Image (tube, rainbow, N blue to C red; front, side, top):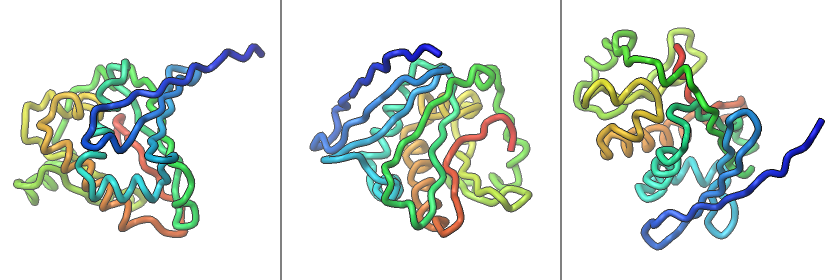
Length: 189
C-alpha cells in the first residue's frame, strides 16, 4: 500500500470581522474533509449554535460548499450525541456524479409544501420516523433543487440562509444520548 502525501489548504473567506477560517483536506476517493476554525477548531456544539444563530457563519458554510470543484456532492458529518457535542466538527464532501444527473421531483413532499406555502424551508420526520428531513420549499426555478450543491449555488440567498438556520435549530432540538446524523441523502429518502 502506497501512502500519498496529503496537501492541506486553508481558504480564508472575506467575512465580517474575519471570524472564521475553513480548512480543506483532500482525501482519497474524490472526497474533501472540511473543518471550521475561530481561535481553534469549532466543536459540533459551536457549529450547531452558529447555524441556528449566525447568518455570517451560514454564509461562510454556503460559500465553502458552493466553491467545491464537485458539480454535485454528498455532505456528511460524524454522528453526534449530547456527550460528544464538544468534539471538533468535521464534515466531508463526497463527489456525487450520480446526483448531477438528477432532476428535481417535488411530488414526494408536495403535501408538506402545501401545508407551509410561505416557508422557505420545512422540517418533518420521514415516513419511517427514523430520520428528520429539512427540505427547501420550491419557490424558485425547479432547477435549483435536485441536490445540495445546486441548491446553494442557485437558489435565492435568503432561502439558503433559512434552510441552514432550520438545520441548526432542528439539530439543537434533537441532539440526545442517541446518535444523530447530519448529512444529505439526495438519492431517495
